[in-house]
Every structure is written in structure tokens, then in C-alpha cells.
Length: 235
Image 1: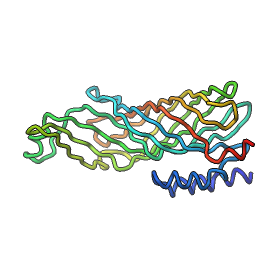
Image 2: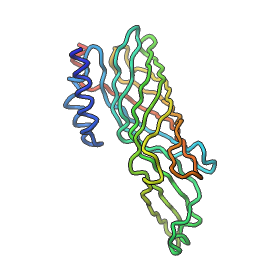
Image 3: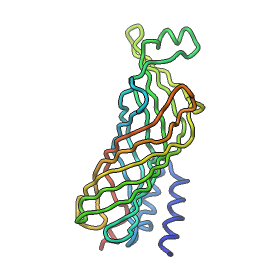
Image 4: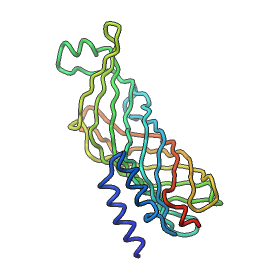
């Protein structure tokens, strides 16, 4: 119970204090305290490729992904896997642009390309099962909080590349939610070790506030997980 309370308190501290740079600092400071015989804590980072399932003209968007994770031991090589994707974008690219209400700007970007970037804090809550303490699979729901989405307009004009970014928070709901599944491989057989794998998120919620546009996100995450402060515990 004492370890569980420590886990909750420090998790909230990390979550509410974190920025992309602050996350690394806090993780290093609290890593040893967060890792116990029942809890593995660490950093997770890699690349993602996201899609908007309901816009046929859209193409996948590549992004960098960074966050932290917890593996909480349950029993029989089973864990609860959670954490936060702190720097994470969903969205898509390759779509046709739309009018912005300014004739001069519209004439520049009318034949350009639209990219929808939807930054989101994602919190997975996954059942995580290990096999021979090497391979593992996980599955469960994921909740997301959308913040500062933008539409990026890009075009070539008079021989140069131009871009224009528009903040579109009013076009989106705040909450995203869906299912996530994945598979990973641990580099060592120790309970706490680096691992790599791929997860897939499938959004179940239409996050668009536009009644004429449906936006359901999906994404592949290619990641490496690095336990922080686990060395002493392993010994």
C-alpha cells in the first residue's frame, strides 16, 4: 500500500509538472524512487505514423513521440501498462486546402496541401502479458486530451515554398478515446530491461466539431522503452 501511494503521488507530480524537457529531468530525479519490486518506470520514445480514417484524400503523418511509462506487476507475468504520451501528434497530411476568407491568401494556397496536426496527451491503460520474460503483448483502452491543433497550409508560389499555420482548437472536441494493442521484445530477460516494439491505436471517437467532417484518429507507434533508476533495484 505504501508503494502504491508513492506511485500515485509521484505519477501525478510528473504528469502535472511535465514539459518535454522537464519530463527528462523529473524522470532522472525520481526514477529510482518510482521503480520498486512491483513497478517499472521509464521513458518511452520513437516515431509514429498517424492517419485520419474518415478522410479518403489524407495520407499518413510522421511524428516524433516521447513520453513515460509504468508497468505495474499483477501476477503470473501479467502487468498493468500505463503512462503518458507527452509529445505526441495525430492527424494526417496530403489533403486539399480550404478557403481562408482572404482572396490573396486563398489564391496562393488553393492548389496547395493541407496537413492537420492534432497534438494530444494520450494515456493508455493496457493489460500487458509477458512470455518467457522476452516477448510481450498488450491490449486495452486509451484516453487522449487534445491541445493546440493546427492546420498547416503549404504551397509552391513564384518558385518558392510557402507555408501558413492556423490554430483550430474550436474545430475539435477536447477528448479522444479508442483502443490500443501492441507487441514488444525485451532486450534482456531481467524483469526490468530496455524493450522495443510497435503499438497501434484505433480511435473510436469523432473528435471533429464540424457536423460535415468526421475525424477519427489512428496511429502506429514504433518505440523504445528505457527503465530509469532500475539498476539498483535489479541488484
